[in-house]
Image 1 (cartoon, rainbow, N blue to C red):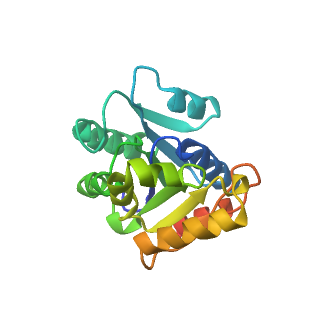
Image 2: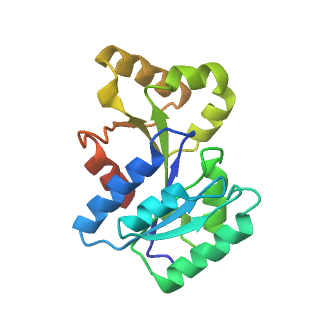
Image 3: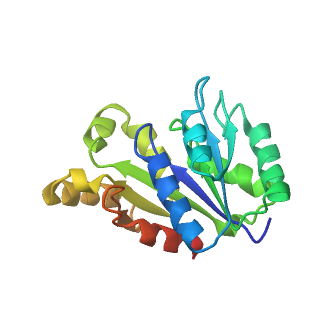
Length: 199
């Protein structure tokens, strides 16, 4: 597993994790890079996993639980099976929006994947930033803090003033972390995210 790049996409519910994941996977496919995707669903129906599989990607679902808590053993088994059966160049992990990405990274490390090649991408939704800061600030901060870099999603839906204000707040919460501005609609920032993941 030491030759595998692993990307953990962290962020609260509805921040655009699956959309970003699909964009990253599409860019990797164009570069002829083999991608596997592991999605952690909450609930009985794995909508995200079904969507990803419908696009022709190698997707593994871990439903009904959080991979950094109740499903930690299932995650480790899934990682080993992915390496054995798919042997991807890049593995993208999308935890549930209630997961803490640094705990997922620890499980990746103990599954014998080279943690130096594991990147945490922390997502902040520009349209819901104020709402999350008002209602879930402590958890939101804990999710973003271990990120290797931050991604502001849905920037096409925000004014420059809103984007600048949120950027400043994020930098205050996460000193020294770079921010990539992303729009799934226009494609802005996607190539930069891929570049950072692949090193």
